[in-house]
Image 1 (cartoon, rainbow, N blue to C red):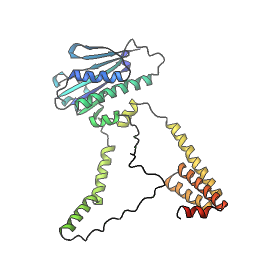
Image 2: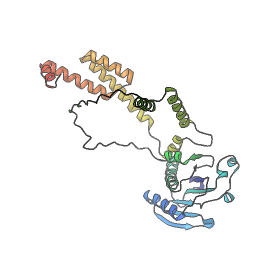
Image 3: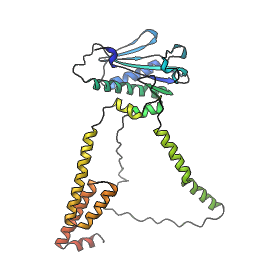
Image 4: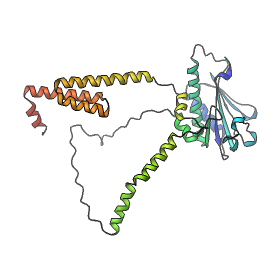
Length: 314
């Protein structure tokens, strides 16, 4: 196995020179490796002040801050931003020669190394605040904020309500009577109009702002890479086929429930069909509708429907 096959690099580009502490960066990188289960074997300073961190299976090289007279670029970098930078810090991650990959899938090894490199680059970028980040190739240039968003794994956030905010499901909302506003005259009326104008901007202004924001988020320059591509290169892909099969099964199940509701009470089934066509298939709505329809029919058959309606105030 050749060593260069599993070698990936990243760089931090600074348009203005900044003061950095190599010891602080080294401690941060070692913390990331140890948190990932890697055991640090040695930390050495090689020639040209190159810092090398060696673990059981990996070798990480941290280049010292390079200045314009020390940087070497290829022909593809002549028209980019990197040649005009005042400082550059490089990170290079390699699988050790004596590491036995065994029957491991090369794609899994690639994802693992890129995930390591992305997390360490993000950690160093947070500490040093560079202007741009180079990812894998000098031509792949990203703004630091864009790289941090792309290199951060998306996780759903569960919102928890406090005990004071939680309300029982059977509680009815109490009406709130708002005080009647007095008639505004003179300066008060102008203040009210000005406040309303700020709250409700003109349609044309709002439309232009939305179009500008859409173009900014969807536009990707030739010298940049898409954040979605970067995230897919770092984290394993999801099983889209399985998600599609589950979605199709849920949609078919919702229509089966609609048909079942139609066998018991056709008007409700018509409304549920209209809701599924307009809003899309909703299995939960169909299941709740079927349960309520069955309960109402059972109450009507037993003669307890009128008593139940009077008990709940209808």
